[in-house]
Length: 262
Image 1: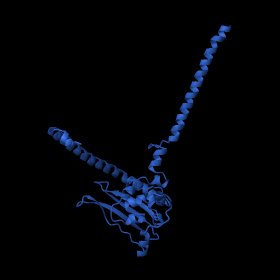
Image 2: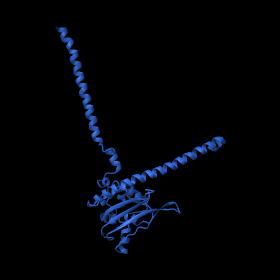
Image 3: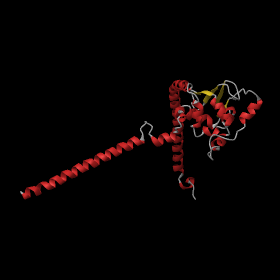
Image 4: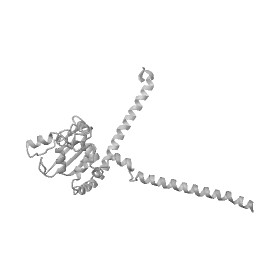
């Protein structure tokens, strides 16, 4: 099979190269523009989400219910992780003002079986030498080495029985939430928590995923059932109009025959 280089003339190849260079430049500019736009709106949203989560922190068992309602995070809830998240009182997500994809996630816990009251921070930064995201080492002060080992050893007996439950944990390199919490490397779960759980916590608290929300209602809050009822009412109205029209036709047909008899 011939390649493009073999098919096109030298002049065409030169033109093609110029066009591809311009396209690449446009793509680069688009990426920069999108990053700037995202940074602008994340900055506007940050104080609002902060106030929202202050309210959430007053709701008993808010985070354990939200984690259980999230299809990815729920898979990391073994016996140990469940006890720890039951002690989770607050989550805060902060973003790098220049690159909002770089996050700092703070988890605040009250005293629990494995460690005392404290805030555990997973803070990302750009490793310029390798041009990739890195993570400042999270610190958890466990009550003892034995409890640390126990907490980080995945327990059997999750609160769910799905065959695929461990798939997401395996992909992220963490078999339970505590392994993720102490991990010294950026994780897909950082993105899941920052971009999905944090801004949509109320949905997951009620056990409503984005997929379910899309299935039963649109993004404007309209219920498909209501629309179906409206359609039915409209169709019923059309049928009534047709019946009335038919009755009028019958009356019109009968009138001449009566006159004929007269």
